[in-house]
Image (cartoon, rainbow, N blue to C red; front, side):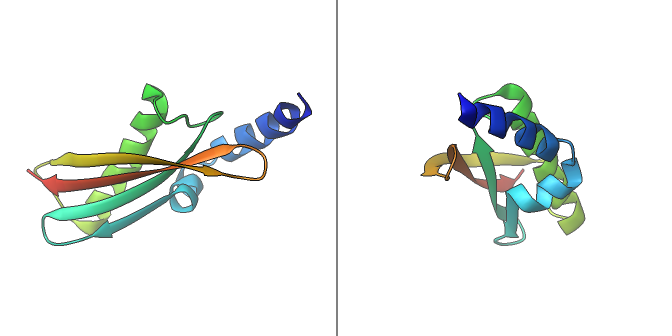
Length: 103
């Protein structure tokens, strides 16, 4: 129980800084003129792997990366999505690996 009482306030504080979180919680790499790799961190509290709202936030961040890279101006398709669970000191965490291509 004490674990959650510590994690929830920390998680809510972290959740408040959207653009800062983008750089802390994600990585983006163009692989070619029409393909990319994207990684995003997830957890069981603030950004669950299968939560629609959390996934929408991850896709918003991906769209920002694509726009700033001037990649996929006509849209894109996610070609693969793989979730890998890791263990943090206080909670389960995940990395979601995306691959995509321009349409």
